Image (cartoon, rainbow, N blue to C red; front, top):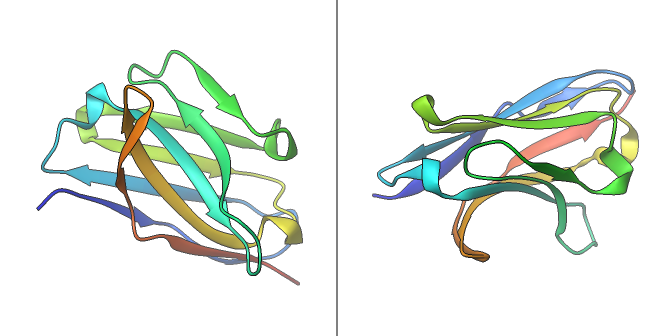
Length: 117
Protein backbone atom coordinates (compact mmCIF):
# COMPACT_ATOMS: atom_id res chain seq x y z
CA UNK A 1 0.00 0.00 0.00
CA UNK A 2 1.02 3.62 -0.48
CA UNK A 3 2.79 4.96 2.54
CA UNK A 4 5.25 7.38 4.05
CA UNK A 5 7.23 6.13 7.02
CA UNK A 6 9.22 8.44 9.28
CA UNK A 7 12.16 7.30 11.36
CA UNK A 8 15.06 8.78 13.29
CA UNK A 9 13.26 10.41 16.17
CA UNK A 10 14.35 10.05 19.76
CA UNK A 11 15.54 11.78 22.89
CA UNK A 12 18.42 14.22 22.58
CA UNK A 13 19.99 16.83 24.83
CA UNK A 14 19.71 20.55 24.01
CA UNK A 15 22.29 21.48 21.42
CA UNK A 16 22.29 17.99 19.96
CA UNK A 17 21.38 16.74 16.51
CA UNK A 18 19.02 14.27 14.91
CA UNK A 19 18.32 13.28 11.32
CA UNK A 20 14.80 12.28 10.43
CA UNK A 21 14.04 10.17 7.39
CA UNK A 22 10.81 9.82 5.46
CA UNK A 23 10.66 6.79 3.20
CA UNK A 24 8.02 6.68 0.47
CA UNK A 25 6.73 3.49 -1.04
CA UNK A 26 4.34 2.48 -3.81
CA UNK A 27 4.08 5.91 -5.41
CA UNK A 28 6.34 8.17 -7.45
CA UNK A 29 7.60 10.40 -4.66
CA UNK A 30 9.95 12.25 -7.04
CA UNK A 31 7.08 14.26 -8.56
CA UNK A 32 5.72 15.41 -5.21
CA UNK A 33 6.65 18.40 -3.08
CA UNK A 34 7.75 17.15 0.32
CA UNK A 35 7.25 18.81 3.68
CA UNK A 36 7.91 18.26 7.35
CA UNK A 37 5.39 19.37 9.94
CA UNK A 38 5.47 19.08 13.70
CA UNK A 39 2.94 19.10 16.48
CA UNK A 40 3.81 19.81 20.07
CA UNK A 41 1.47 18.82 22.93
CA UNK A 42 -1.47 21.20 23.12
CA UNK A 43 -0.47 23.03 19.96
CA UNK A 44 -1.57 23.00 16.37
CA UNK A 45 0.43 21.21 13.72
CA UNK A 46 2.88 23.63 12.11
CA UNK A 47 4.86 23.60 8.90
CA UNK A 48 8.60 23.24 9.49
CA UNK A 49 10.17 22.92 6.05
CA UNK A 50 9.29 22.27 2.42
CA UNK A 51 11.28 21.02 -0.55
CA UNK A 52 10.26 21.00 -4.19
CA UNK A 53 10.14 17.79 -6.20
CA UNK A 54 13.61 18.25 -7.65
CA UNK A 55 15.08 19.59 -4.44
CA UNK A 56 15.97 22.88 -6.07
CA UNK A 57 14.02 25.05 -3.65
CA UNK A 58 13.57 24.80 0.09
CA UNK A 59 11.71 26.88 2.63
CA UNK A 60 11.77 26.94 6.41
CA UNK A 61 9.75 28.40 9.21
CA UNK A 62 11.67 31.18 10.92
CA UNK A 63 12.23 29.31 14.16
CA UNK A 64 14.35 26.60 12.48
CA UNK A 65 16.23 28.63 9.87
CA UNK A 66 19.96 28.07 10.16
CA UNK A 67 19.48 24.95 12.30
CA UNK A 68 17.41 22.53 10.19
CA UNK A 69 18.08 21.34 6.65
CA UNK A 70 15.54 19.56 4.47
CA UNK A 71 16.80 17.38 1.63
CA UNK A 72 15.71 14.48 -0.52
CA UNK A 73 17.16 11.60 -2.48
CA UNK A 74 14.66 10.76 -5.20
CA UNK A 75 16.62 7.69 -6.25
CA UNK A 76 15.90 6.31 -2.77
CA UNK A 77 12.36 7.75 -2.51
CA UNK A 78 13.43 9.34 0.74
CA UNK A 79 13.31 12.79 2.27
CA UNK A 80 15.35 13.95 5.25
CA UNK A 81 15.34 16.58 7.94
CA UNK A 82 18.70 17.27 9.52
CA UNK A 83 18.14 19.01 12.84
CA UNK A 84 21.07 20.67 14.58
CA UNK A 85 21.33 22.83 17.68
CA UNK A 86 18.10 21.37 18.97
CA UNK A 87 16.16 23.26 21.60
CA UNK A 88 13.54 22.06 24.10
CA UNK A 89 10.92 23.95 22.09
CA UNK A 90 11.65 21.66 19.14
CA UNK A 91 10.04 18.82 21.09
CA UNK A 92 7.12 17.51 19.04
CA UNK A 93 5.86 14.70 16.87
CA UNK A 94 7.31 15.24 13.41
CA UNK A 95 5.33 14.27 10.33
CA UNK A 96 6.29 14.16 6.69
CA UNK A 97 3.91 14.54 3.78
CA UNK A 98 3.81 14.57 0.01
CA UNK A 99 1.84 17.16 -1.94
CA UNK A 100 0.88 17.53 -5.57
CA UNK A 101 -0.33 20.81 -7.03
CA UNK A 102 -0.41 22.31 -3.51
CA UNK A 103 -2.69 19.57 -2.21
CA UNK A 104 -1.34 17.25 0.48
CA UNK A 105 -1.94 13.69 -0.67
CA UNK A 106 -0.05 11.49 1.77
CA UNK A 107 0.95 11.76 5.44
CA UNK A 108 3.31 9.68 7.48
CA UNK A 109 2.44 8.37 10.93
CA UNK A 110 4.87 10.62 12.79
CA UNK A 111 8.03 10.22 14.85
CA UNK A 112 8.61 11.66 18.32
CA UNK A 113 11.45 14.09 18.90
CA UNK A 114 12.17 15.03 22.50
CA UNK A 115 14.80 17.57 23.48
CA UNK A 116 15.61 17.53 27.16
CA UNK A 117 18.51 17.43 29.56
